[in-house]
Image 1 (cartoon, rainbow, N blue to C red):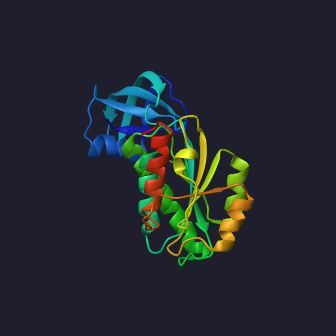
Image 2: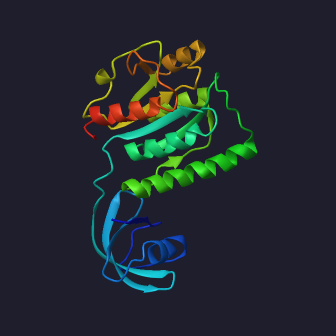
Image 3: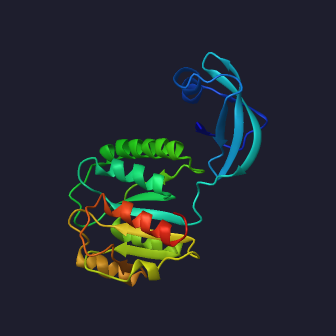
Length: 241
């Protein structure tokens, strides 16, 4: 069923214009009486039907509200070191599909990709658009945000202050993930390194700030594969998959 995000909770009738209105009227060719879902972006869905179509303006009638079943009980923040090329695009898309709450690009010591400020602004805009499209496609109840790039040290401090399970996935081994995440876990910060992995000084800094090293198994995963595996694992262990 098509899903559209709103800026706030709707009333009985909602007028959709612009891109959403055009998509309903022209691409989906929806007619009065056909069902769709509206979402306030805060975890509540609104079962609705098309009430009227006037050009690219679509009036929607709200029938009832209910909590979004697609939102996990675990709030997972992904701290992903910047990879080369456009790999981050795929990371954003897959992370949103798997239930991530927030994505933070991280500039760590071994990152090969080091875009300038102008390039980063454009990338951030594209990443948030990818996140929004993925959230609509998979029926999320929120629009996960891609935050501005943080240096590794600042990202570690932010994760420490957030509380919950702070985990960095390290090819050098670590604590079994099953002992760090369970059905009671409600907050997790997950760190993924770049193509060259974390520098030993970064591992030491992460430990000093209470983050726990963990492993995703005996195989070394690519930087764009590791976040998918990590999120799938923590969602399974927390009872959300």
